[in-house]
Length: 311
Image (cartoon, rainbow, N blue to C red):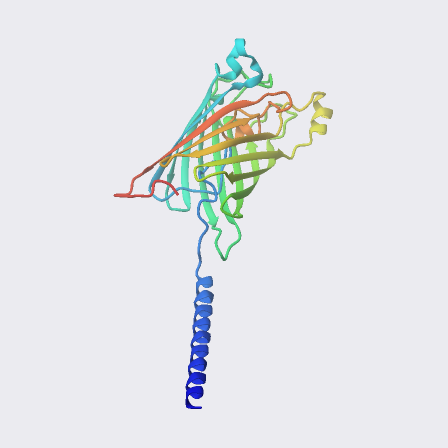
């Protein structure tokens, strides 16, 4: 009987200890769930393909961008070597003022355009916040000689410097659904101080959609599409001509190689800033007006002994 009492006492104390441990683990799990854990690397670069992502760069870090676009692949082998004989280029720099705020500038050979921009991350996805949100603004200046001919055939004439300027405002909303899939939506307003013709609107509203799917640790596939909210029937009724521009769609691959990201892609737009790929895309995938291109982003740190080269 004494042995039975001792045995019962042993089992009772074991059960109580186990229950206490379970209660302690539950309390620790509850406490851990209250601590904010941010989502990392929704996208691997500050640009998806042509457009922006919600990503910024770390404080005191500098991104150097080289963007290159060849001619249309339907231009033929003998005449233009499937577009490889042509080239458009943009060089850009962007700097992290803080981990959430960057500024940047670039120069495109298309319309000899200078652009200046800033992006600020308003919200960061975490275990307490389902999305990330960033605000983006761009100011572009066309420096072509007045009277040049645009790809649509319009002769563009400027009478003052204000007419050369365009502006972009954009909200970027993204969510990383799991380790492989990230999606983003980009409501956008593009305003040109001087429209191409009297039939074109100065202000264009557009909604962008983009995403990335991770194929391996260093390789991912990405795509983006910008739907322009334009009444093309009204343009046809006023001008008697079909609206000359189309929605931009691009698809490509991102290859991460440590200190830089290499992006290969195909797009029906040769433009590398919003003014061009949202407002002036005159190619279509149906006609094989597809332009092959690439972006290279190299990150430099200005922090002493910094080990992190990109965010």
